[in-house]
Amino acid sequence: MKSAIKMAALLATGLSLGAVSPALAQSKPLLVFVPNGASDFWQAAAAGIKKAQAELPGYKLELEYPQQATVAAQQQLMDDLVTAGAKGIMVSAVDPKTSTTGLNKIASETALFTTDSDAPQTNRVAYIGSSNIDAGEQAAEIAKKAMPNGGKCLGFVGLLGADNARERIQGFKQGLAGTQITLVDVRGDDLDQTRAKENVSDALVADPNVTCMVGFYSYNTPQIYAALKQGGALGKITVVGFDGDPVTLGGVKEGTIAGTVVQQPFLWAYQGMKLMAAYVKGDKSGIPAGNLIIEPTKIVSKDTVDAYVAEQKAMSAN
Image (cartoon, rainbow, N blue to C red):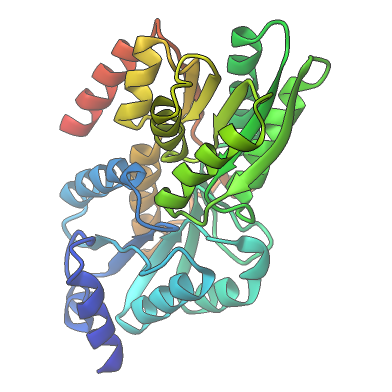
């Protein structure tokens, strides 16, 4: 079977939590978490899926990365998963605005949920994740505290077209309203971390007046950190981060990163898998009015970083 061969090729990369096969899908309902691309950010989601699997022995739970962080690759993966018998898919859509037809096709064939980057114009059952506008506003709070006299910020993000990116940028701008801090531009890298670092290095040369850099995706802040350190500018430019990458948290602790806004991918995956399992069994009571389940984001600062790290370790250990 052609789809089974494709699945085998994907699994050979070592990025999956387990094998997908029509036989397994027939013996146990298959539920799959599909990120927008490979990133260490999703390790917490993998831990959430592992915990959910222990509580859902009658289901087969998987995390599957698309081969590339593109709409086409993500759609192909979901099509293959449906062919393999997936009863539910939870996806962080690469570019929801250009994916309506494809996502609706999946929604007509299996239970489709979204996470991280929503696609509210589609027939998805529900979204579980952050309010990215709120997260952007929290990032602005970090910037305002660090730069009371104003400044010129440059943003860096993976997917400029994704809802999570657009909403974080929108929230950041809203949070800066009435201040002397401006976001002059945001540069995308299509989830290419080499390019992400190059974007920062290029910016240091192109605009010496930039006093603040914002990493809107989990890996952007570590790449900002690396480029600033290499360029001798670490500690001279205010850095505002997103998510809890170890490099980001280390920078927050040492004071070279002003703070970071953290999300809860562990809970997205853990609660999302349990929600999907109930839904495919016919229990829709967990789907709220409005079809949104928001897990709040929070600011991690130098004063709170140790407590946050300990909390995350305890959560993953349970």
